[in-house]
Length: 117
Image (tube, rainbow, N blue to C red; front, top):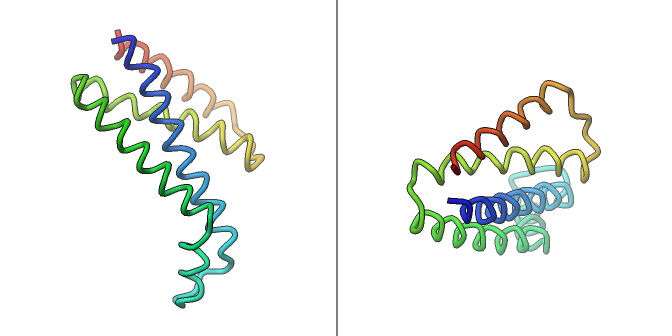
């Protein structure tokens, strides 16, 4: 089961990268409008294209994990994306993280370790 943890970290990192790139693409597309120009700016954006590639890699990793490990073990490992997402928000978007969220992160990591055993 300890081979699951590196795979879960990789899958979560790819998922977070996908969502970070989506946020950047949305910011670069400007104010939302129901226009072809806005959708073109959004979907033709290199960040959104990169997000799609990350999504494909995430899906491939997820399918590999599903094939090799029990679903009841693999699915809770998705919570590692919450940990990485919060760290990414802090690093890339300079968000302030309160103590209660740090406590939650510690609990998530502990839970993943217990599940992987």
